[in-house]
Length: 339
Image (cartoon, rainbow, N blue to C red; front, side, top):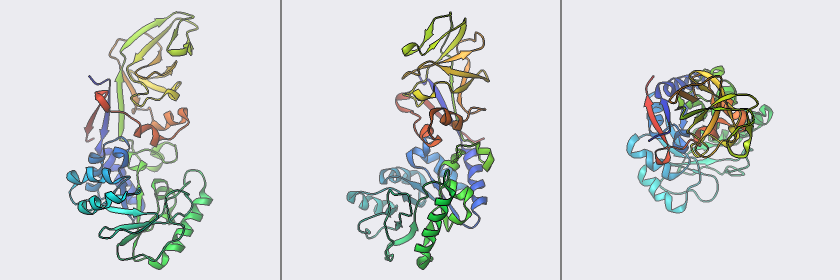
């Protein structure tokens, strides 16, 4: 029996794709669906994005691309991460495109050369003259959310290095670049987090016209009254100072509700309630204003509870939160709507 439910609204995905395409103008939108679509479901999100005009999908690994191919037919799929020598033949057979950030360019498969303009991760130090297999040139922005000056330098370096080969598809922008740095858009933008309606800047997504596509719901599994001096959870991190109603939610860090979300707000019966005490593997407690019946709905994300607010409490980013949601072993049910 599932202890919580993830509801994915493909209508929101499509609306976000439309928003991004308007922002990008003549540049193509390539939707990033790695890590199972950031926890939203890569096949469903990919199909919705393509139907709304995304020109390609991006994944992290060859196996991720291979998993998409049967469901998405002839869609253009780009593998962003490094590929092992033994995976090249599989990629070729499946019609995937590969990124080369060092080493030799494989034959018989479309290739994108990746230049390191400042990320300091995957990437060539200098861009060689592209051979016949090369169809694209790319780089990756490191700090669109924190350092506009450095971002501008990256854009300028990429423009200079790739200008002699402008006949190839040039792509640099991620979600943040696409939304806030027009000169980063070039021929295509690889947008991930914004497709899902989450802010690359840790702000309200509505500021950029985005709509969150994920809702996470559970319910109260137990309700009890703590007397003064009584506690809940490991380590007695929450001790009642007065008679206090608490509810136990059957979701914990094994499901993706992390230990460092202690103190964050969720909604119980539509009302904001604080997560209190140590969050355990399978459950956490919420402080209630009154006694409520077992089975009362609890919203963990959605309906006024944002992934951005949880990320701020946890000192992390929305990317990590949503991609860490665990649907293994039937703990969390996933459903898809088209709202």
